[in-house]
Length: 444
Image 1 (cartoon, rainbow, N blue to C red):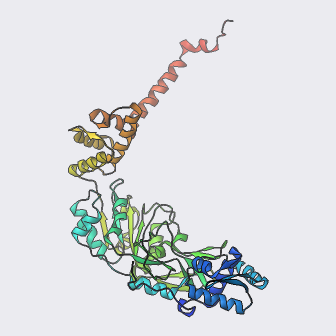
Image 2 (image 1 turned 90 degrees about the vertical axis):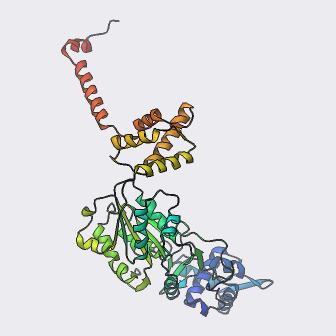
Image 3 (image 1 turned 180 degrees about the vertical axis):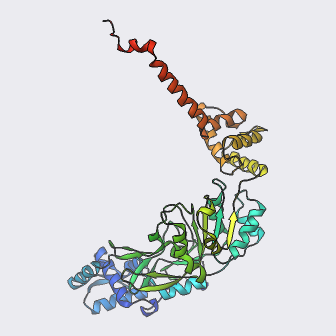
């Protein structure tokens, strides 16, 4: 990918925008880990240009912290002096990090603001984003404007209606990539931001891009019941002396989905109160462990998703802070049949005509009382296992629907009947006419 306005790799230490002492500390720690090393190896390990790395090595040589052992072309071969090792160990006591050099928080803030861009949302683009889901026009036309509106989005509805699937696909309305820093420097402290689990790099990366940045797809972060208050603030890792970015910082320029909203250990109102200022003003405030407070942009589309009764999660004032509240409801007969056809095709299952109607009736009678899009996929998964076990063809008919239903749906009435039969049998066993048998001796 050719250079097209991306930040170029700095050529001097001053162009890095971070304290030179921090760069020297990183270099000393990295050199201590590597032992005998070279300018090129350190350049690659710290994501600094060869020109910057050469300048740092020359400074450390003048301070008698390294011994030059030779040259391989223009590549210095060296190792730390005893004084250099002492300095490195001293710095290791404060911070063990020796990875990518950070970008300054000033440059980070400027980049996030430059990458703020509402997606070009239309009915057609929304249809394309949800092309692999069966979604009604009503839902599509409510989600679209909600994406264009500032503030959070609230998805609610009964379990199994696809709220999580809907929320996760909202990021598809963005097609442009964004730059994510590997780490950010604040007051000479290092905050790790790039996470390969969350951030997906594009390939190839732009030529001449400052390697402290990674060009990625716009991030989409999904958290559920595991969300705790600590995940919304900087986390200091004492073992290596760096901070982990909070989830909203990792999701900047992208999407943050709070799934199973209301099932977290933190109360819904407390969670919303934590983000009330960021949602309103689009800025967030974070604090280092020793009290230094700083500002970062809050360019995140927050989506709350829940299957709980909205009335149990907050009052009118609570919901007034969330402009877009969208019901994700059960689906129609036609939509259910379409989902079933897609699921069956994906599993190589043949549907006998008329089976769709029977499955719909079973779903209403034994399931949730309505039709929900999760069920066809579950039916097909169980049917594959049953057919594999019985060595029979993958065919979905009325009989196989009943077989799957007997496995999938709980049968409370049947359970109560079984308990009654067990109790009756126990009573018969202890009846008076059988009492003597239990205590009688067995003949030899």
